Length: 276
Image (cartoon, rainbow, N blue to C red):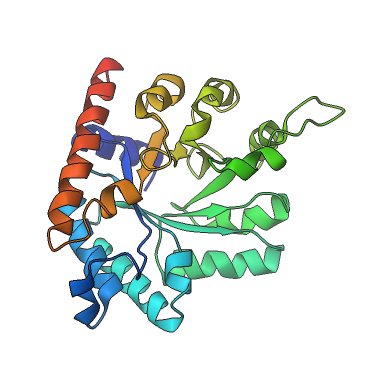
């Protein structure tokens, strides 16, 4: 999926919502635990309920890897289900990978060939040779960790380089421009750092940004749109817990649908205000 195709989906659905499938076996409704694959069953119902209101899904791999082989099976089934039923949906592997070149090449093979994701989150701190292997796949995307929403982001991401005066997250943005393009590279920018989005847009005006932190983490959707939206929207705003755990009862899918619809409605208004 290229940038224009993603933008067309945003316009069609009047939404730039990404639903995070952070599916925790300890938090899903109890009645699902009796099924043969509780994680996939939960994901399937969430996907069927919310797919009208979102343009992307983002499984966080930790929730699947923690269950061993069974978790990977649930993840594969989830990806295959989306691909077969809703092929227009953008699929992000929230894996946060990044290693020496030959290892990154195998990670890329896993997520793009075997699992058929559209994008994977990548940690850029080992440099260009750890990122480039992900970029050899036509039509696939990397999403570089840049300015994250967690408290510990302050430990390193705002440190200034003594020579250039750039903060670390600024160096990631500027240096990575030599690695990829607006057609294969996005950036993770936390919604809790929304005031920094204007600065980020000055450096990368045309790239898509994946923005977690709206909802349970307290980020403001309006501030994100005000500071980060560009002429092609340029935003994928993720909400996980606020949607998928809207209810712990048998009505969980119905409540998730209502929560996603509420976010989509606000996004539609923001798109109208931006004349998109």
